[in-house]
Length: 119
Image 1 (tube, one colour):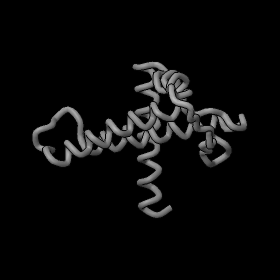
Image 2 (cartoon, one colour; image 1 turned 90 degrees about the horizontal axis):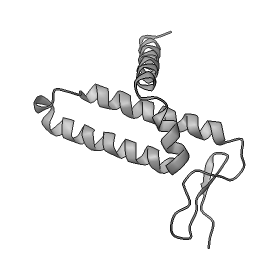
Image 3 (cartoon, rainbow, N blue to C red; image 1 turned 180 degrees about the horizontal axis):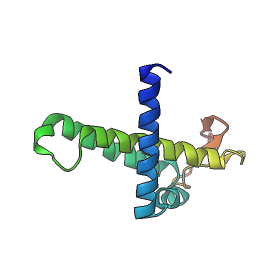
C-alpha cells in the first residue's frame, strides 16, 4: 500500500468514527430527514457546507470553531450518507427520491440515473 492509499484509508476510518459519534449524539437525523425530503435534504446540507467552506476560505483566521478540514470531512460524510440512502432504496424500481413537489413534476431514481418524466 503506497502512502496515498494509507492516508486515504486513515481518512475513511476517521470519517467512520465521526459518523458513529455524530449518529450517537444526534440520532439518525439524516435518514429521517431523507424519508421526508429525499435527495433535497442532501442538496441543502451540502450547500450549507460549501457556503461554510467559502466563508472559511475567505476568513479562515477569523473562524475558530470549525476548520476547512472539518467542513470537508462533514461534506464527505454527507455524500456517504446520501449514497447509503440511495443504496438502501435502489432495490425498488422507480423509487421516488424527492418528495412529490407541489408542482406536477416528479423525479424518480432508477438504477444509477434519475428520470424526470415528461408531463
